[in-house]
Length: 233
Length: 87
Image (spheres, chains in turn orange, yellow):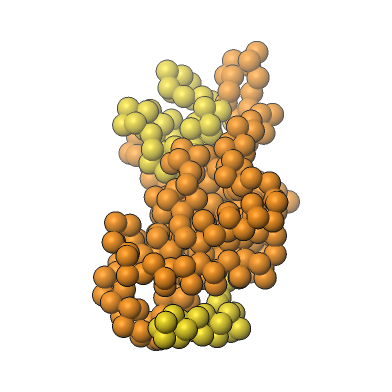
């Protein structure tokens, strides 16, 4: 078995998140952008409003019931951002800062509308015991190899590329994300769909890196299970 | 049923690998554990595929497409920007 000793790197066959989102780390010069905004540059504002929108919407939708209300939160957030813009100190990226403001406004609004206290939703979700794979997939304590797979997951690299990345597959992924509990949906949307960094998500939502990681993984694990059912069918 | 190789018995079981996957995928495992984790992956097709599938899932999610700024909201935001500029 020495031939397999070379470390195998689990290279993702559908392109890593980082490849898809070249802007995972904001590279724009925030201070130049802020200067243009403060000078009233409408073009700069439109560009940044368009660029930040998917992430702001994801944050807003984590706390609000409808798309219309989420869009109102986005608008309210921008009004707040513009009012405070001359005090932006660049301690975080502009994008992180804008997301934090959007999250604050969404939370305030959720409380005002007497919805469940959303701050603890992430903690509650983490505390819920859940395994990424059903325990039945592993051999029991009486087996000579307890805790090992009963049968291996299938090799997705053997799937034709057209099947793995088909419109049907992407629709399934979208549906699976939509059906996740809000606390996970918001995190997988920010991290994987819109390409935010872990730090940005923690800052915006006020959650610990550990909670962020666990919920992201649980979200991915659920979507993975849906894909597995589809591909193994 | 795949027969485990047994050579990694001193390391993690598959079930433990799946439990630790969140930390591994996000590069949050301490070096020592990460080494043991990768040792297991090198010998276990099941776990190797599982981690691959988690990464593929993230890669597919990155392709579902983002929501675009609706035209009406764009116009509202621009108006808000103009109001702010005047104030």
